[in-house]
Each structure stands twice: as C-alpha cells, then as structure tokens.
Image (cartoon, rainbow, N blue to C red; front, side, top):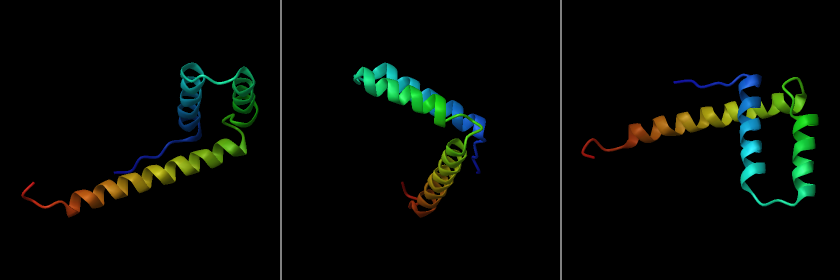
Length: 79
C-alpha cells in the first residue's frame, strides 16, 4: 500500500489542523495572530515551506505504513 499526498492535499490537512488548533486551544491573542500570519505568509501551496512539509508528511506516512506491515508479519498465527 502506498499513500502519498500532493501539495494541495497537504496544505488542506495543515490548514485543518491549524484551524482546529486555533479554535480549540486557549492561546493568547498574540500567539493566535502569529499562527494566522505564519499560515497566510509561509504555508501557501506555492511556497517552499509547504513543499518541504509535504515531503515530510509523505515520508512519515510511508514509514508508518511500512512499520504496520512489518508488525503484521511478525504477529503469531495463534492470536
């Protein structure tokens, strides 16, 4: 199994996580403003930071899938 996100999908995921973070945590207004500013200035789909984040997400997903497959192979049959 192979899972790979493109830049737009990674941006949507990051945007969702950041939105939930801003809505559900008690952060000072200054910190909320910094996060919003960072998201709007640095984490656009066309920016280098988003490309790097996409690569990191894809590497982490590949490692998680590989780890899951290895652990299933090692499970004893009697379980």
